Length: 178
Image (tube, rainbow, N blue to C red; front, top):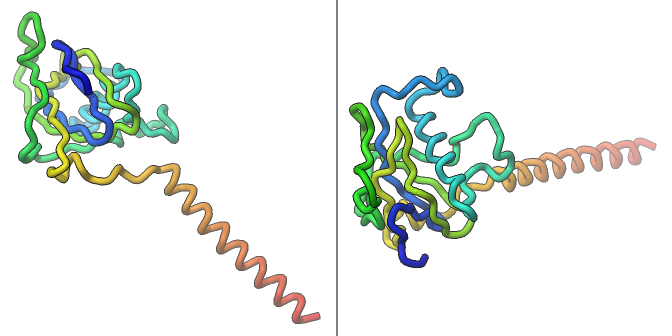
């Protein structure tokens, strides 16, 4: 990826790890009614990546599915990763939330190409750090998550093989009886 632009966050191809501040008392949003803090964080991260042209984090089977946010994992901590960029590098006034936040670490897989997006933040969330992927850290060098479409196709193929085998057995049994 080229040099990082001030005020922009990179979205690396492959695994990404971010630290995000999430307000402890999230603002009321009708569309988020009944969702816990974890689901809302996952949805926010997934939605934030939509601003990065070329990145693909949402489920490629159905990007409008009701389980939005499933592609984002919440982690206990980033381990030994080094920050590629932090919110302090964003020019302009300091980025702050208006009430007590908790820092959360998330990980998601970008199936698209490397991209950048304007530094993500709103009334409930503030990106604190984007970590540099490394070949020596299991958080960023792991294999990609299973593709739901490939899993569904594999399951369908297995079912088709079983049904085909049963039908063949029925035909053979009927031929033997004659």
